Amino acid sequence: MSHDVPESTTGIRFGKRTRRFALLAVFGASLLTVGVAALIPPEPVLDEGPQSGVSTLDRAVRTAEAKLAKHEQDPQAWAELGAAYVEVARVKADPAYFPKAEEALRKSLGQQPEGNGIASAGMGALANARHDFAGARDWGEKAKAALPDNAEVHGVLNDAYTQLGDTAAATAALQRMLDLKPGVASFTRAAYEFEIHGRVDDARHALDRALADAVDPSDVAFCRNLLGELAFDNGDLDTAQRHFEAGERAAPQETSLQQGKAKVAAARGQTAKALAGYRDLVARQPNVGNLREYALLLSTSGAPESAARQYELFEEQRRLEVASGANVDLEASLVAADRGDAVQALRFAQAEWERRQPVFVADAMAWALHLNGRHAEALTFADRAMSTGWRNASFFYHRGMILAALGRPGEAVKALAEALRINPNFSLTDARTARTTLANLGGAG
Image 1 (spheres, one colour):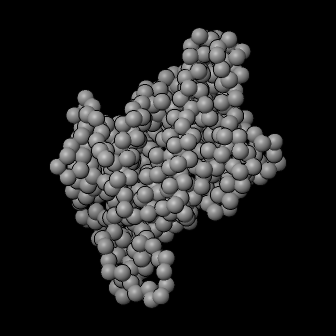
Image 2: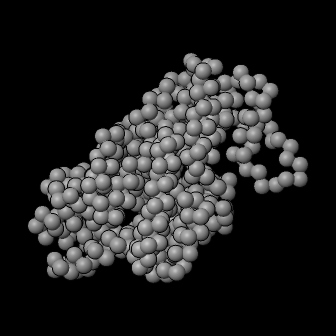
Image 3: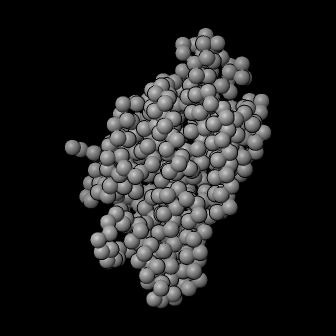
């Protein structure tokens, strides 16, 4: 089976071994720490005796800790431990590991201030995970000076530049990553660039390439989850379900697949199944994204008190993440908008926009301004959100509602209809509003 990606006009190469294919490259937020574990060199497996189920990541932590128990003055081991903690934080969605990671990485840098590429890259990955993308850029550039031919370092830079909205720098970083180490981490990042530029088929082909290269069950599940998300975002519930189930067979413990299945169930009107899925999901992994989705589903299911409790838990989790050094202003803006708090939605969106200007933050700004009645300003941000050609149903919906508020019904109908064409199930609440607005404007819903 061929996984070739068609050539683009960019001249950027995408390939493996001696094969080369052209592509664009940026990426999406879900990949922020993927690949950081590869900064850790392989070690002999510790004797686990009869115990089973010890992950590679667990071994990395134990190996580094064992080294440090013998020799505390070991900058390499501190860097390995810090990088492992960053990955643990991602896998477990537990921000409590962020301070542990930073402490270990700073001990490494204290013992070896110059030329410590692994620790610098670990600090960059940590900054990305905390949504400190300017800091991640700076640490990544420092790591690149020490390790110019390390693919994971360029992955850290790609993540940072993408989130900062610097497409050219993100593209250059990913191309270098692809040249050095084509594989799951680079192909999945490439898929996001294709998607952000409206090239859905190319994104799918890139993810197929990633899946073909995946060996570890967690990598297989990761690729399946991204393929499922891509299918869902483009209105293909059957394909999304198939990928989520296949990923779950590979790695039953991966909660992202459970989230995908619950989302599909909600889109199909299987409300009880969706609620049960989300209830278990937030018990296992109560991150801000899962809590927000569960709260929205409860709201649309006629359970406002239960939804309010999930929003309370969201706020508790947000405070925990802020206390750990993370920034979740974008997520807070979205939740404030969901709850009708226009002032808070705009305050959080503006704080995020001051830090970075990618298209999804532009969209958050557009929607928050619209909710505050500042429709003309909102349209300028909505236009910026659409500037890369991303076929994002929520972007089209937001733009359509802004145009309707500005008294431009023809353009509003076109945008709202396109949102529903891309993904009729993009949002339980907003899709209904889009249909109602289309009907009121005389458009086909």
